Image 1 (cartoon, rainbow, N blue to C red):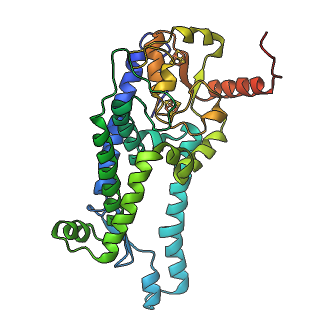
Image 2: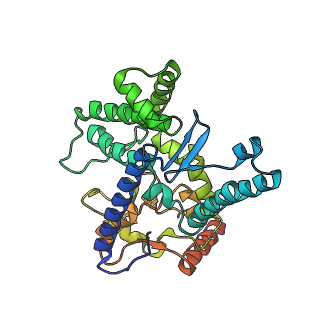
Image 3: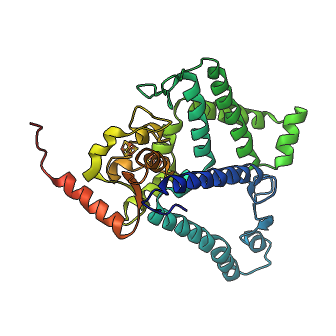
Length: 328
Ligand code: SF4
Ligand code: SF4
C-alpha cells in the first residue's frame, strides 16, 4: 500500500521501489484472475446453479429448504450468515479501503488496468501517443515512432480481448468444458456466440476506449472514486503550488521536454490539478515517481494522507472560492 514516503533525496529510490512492488501485485492478481475459475477459487457454475468459493461449494441453504430438510427459520439464518453478511462485509471492506486510500484496487490490482498500461506502452512505440485520443505525440529526443508496432498493438488488443471473453465464460461454465471445447472444436453455438460477441466488444474497447472505460464506464472504479471523494483526509497526490515555478526545469528520462507527470499518467490526467479534477486517479504513483526523478530532493508532487491531505483539500477549496483575477 502506498505511503507518503520520505521527502528527501531517497525519494527517487522510494518511488522506484514502490513501482516495482506495484508491478508485482498487478502481475500476481492478473494470474489469479486467469486461474481462479480453473482452481474453483471463484466461479458461478450456471449448469449446477452453484457458487464455488475458495475450492468449496458455497451454498445458501435454499436447496435444503426446497427438499424440506430445514425449516424456513433455519433457511433464513443460513441465508443471512452465508449470503447477506459476507456480501455486506466485502462491500464495506472494499469501500473502506477506497475511502482511506482511493482507487488502490484499480492502480495496484485490476487486470484491466494492467492491460491499459501495457497497451499504452505498445501504442507509444507505434505512434508516440499513449492513447489514440491524445492530441500530441510525446517522444524523447532521438526517439521515433515505428510503424511496425501497429500490428503488434492491434493484435495484442484482439488477443487479450478474446482471451478476456474466454476467461469470463469460465467464470460461468466449467473451465475444462470451455478450454477443452475450444481445443477440440466442440463448443456449442451459444458458447461460440458469447466468445465472438464479447471478444469483439473487448477488442474495440481495448483499442479505442480503454481509458474512457476506466474513467467513466466501470462501476467498481466509480464507487471507489465516490468513497474517496467523500473523505478529505484520504491519500491524495498533492502539488506544492507555492513552488510551481520549479516545474519550468522539469525534465526526466521519459519526458526530457518537461511536464513529466502529465505525460506518464496512465489515466491521462493532469496530476497538478485539484482533487475534484483527479476524480479517477488510481493511485498508481507514476506521476510521483517522475517528479522525484525530476526534482530529486524536493519533489513537487507527493502523496499526503490524514491531516496533511485535509490541509491540502482546504487549501484547494479556498483557492477555488477566490474570485478570478485577470492577468495583467
Ligand atoms: S494522477 Fe498520478 S497517481 Fe493518479 S493516475 Fe495519474 S499518474 Fe497515477
Ligand atoms: S513532474 Fe513534478 S516538476 Fe515535473 S511538471 Fe510535474 S509536478 Fe512539475
